[in-house]
Image (cartoon, rainbow, N blue to C red):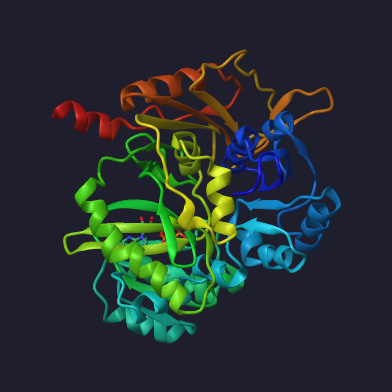
Length: 432
Ligand SMILES: Nc1ncnc2c1ncn2[C@@H]1O[C@H](COP(=O)(O)OP(=O)(O)O)[C@@H](O)[C@H]1O
Ligand SMILES: [Mg+2]
């Protein structure tokens, strides 16, 4: 354990996820000071923010050195895959998040698919293509629906679940022919379409040690009743009852343990978050994908539920002492409702003045995502997802009611939110 107040922490990123990380670091007894880069309007109210882009690896390392930072927490996937953690460790600064070799598990779906198949971890069967014609030929003999995936990072837009041959061909043509994702789509996976309920599990990993974080459920579609286009996420709650103890034990046995072992066996020194997307099929749980950082909005419900200091957890993982950590989770529930700008995930207005609540209850939080502050300190909208209104409660109904109460006290002209976050599970609960 680092001694009390010995850490100066730099949080890298500018979304809701990073605002939670800043607030967790400020609350940690291990932490002396917190800075962030590039930050957002809310992070600026909580700590100093430096205008360094997440893609500027040398700039971020220079910032950490100049500031005397001794622990960096990296939020998004892009700096991880660009080798930010490698560069920090080279100058002796510990960081939470995988080295570039580990970040490949998210940055290349083909790399991960090969690893999963080689180690016999349950996943959809898939074929790899880098040429258009062979891919089109393969589709001719394939059953529909079928899934087309760009290999590389595509900001959540690189996967098409094609219902028929025409849609599948169009997806393959746009990726391998028109190169709409550039190099990220110059190779594709064509994979079997799995049927079932989707869930995800967050692990904090350090070599062969790992800790399973509470379950959570996100809401990807922009519209109520899970309609409309996919987004970064419109809300989340935790725990998710879909994953009961028996299913969790099976996921742990068939997916988590074998995945962590396979990653280590491949010589990857993985220290960071492994966020596993899973389809629970009739034949059991199967891996859809790995992400190598915390989900957003999931982090906004996961971290507030931890009794264990999130900084102690992440620092232990980064410094190979995760075995010392006994994770403690608060009883009860958390719900996060995302306030977006109307039009998101398409185009939306920016620069609208926001009225914030004047006070918060002890179990209520307003995390900023796409916000900035103007010269006179007013908060302006600056992104598609603007805030995450999160609350804890002893029941899901209570947490959800409180989260909406926070959300309804935030005002800006184009504010949009889904009114049905948590509704499916609440309906299931009341049916019992
Ligand atoms: N093999 C599959 N079968 C059915 N649906 C899939 C499959 N792979 C992906 N999906 C769907 O597409 C979504 C996005 O795919 P995913 O692999 O998670 O990539 P990304 O999050 O990078 O876009 C998943 O959340 C899931 O709904
Ligand atoms: Mg995904």
